[in-house]
Every structure is written in structure tokens, then in C-alpha cells.
Length: 157
Image (tube, rainbow, N blue to C red; front, side, top):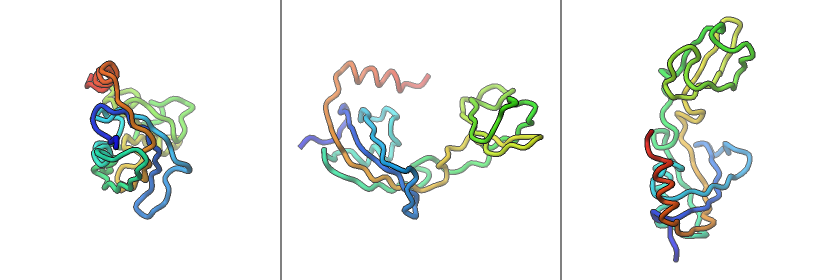
């Protein structure tokens, strides 16, 4: 049987649930990734799929530190409304805090008043344990060129 290992493309269908079993997305998603630590999947999730075969299913539970990280209150910034675009509204994202040198993080406006806005760089699922229900749909070997391209794409800048 063909199994998941480094150098193989994996096409899977997954759905995420919180620790109480509530679906975090309305419908399952499909994803194709190259197995081998190229950053397309959470490391703990990718590791749990190693050795599984086409057609198999898996239920993988991850604590926050292995999923989207622990919630960090230090990643919240209160910013004066004058430093932000006039049309700001909750849900808008910014690369870095406007008016400051970018720290490379994406900040989401979570609350907006006439005087200020709260910008949060935590992942929306930070601090949550999650369970993934996964179905492995298809496996096939990657070419040397595809592996080289993934290595280049995932290399630190």
C-alpha cells in the first residue's frame, strides 16, 4: 500500500472542530500539499499523517501550542484612530501596526471606536485546542523539480 512519506504529494479532505465538538467551518475543505515539512500543514498534524495510506481517515486532536499557538496578550495593540485609515472597521487587516516599522505580523482590527482601535496579531484560533477529521484522498510521488521548488518556497527569507 502506498503511504504518506517525505517526497509525496498528499490530497486530503479535512474539517476542524473545537474541543467541545463544534465545527469551526461550515463545510470540509480540500488541501494538496507536499509531505516533508515545507510549512503547508501544522507540524504536529503533518507528523500524525506519516505512514497513513490513501483512503484512510484520521482524527487528530491538537493542544493550542501544537495547533495555532497560545493566546498572547502582548500581541494586542491599542492604536489611535487618527493613525488608521478613515474607513477602518472590525475585521480589516494590516501588515504591522500602521505608523510603525512592520514587525512582519498581520494585525486584525477587533474593535473600533471614535478614538481608537484594537489590533490583534494572534491567530484567530490561538489558545484553542482543535480536532481535525481527515480523509486521505490521493497520494503520488513528487518530481525532483517539485521538491526543489517547495524547498525554495519554504526557505526563510
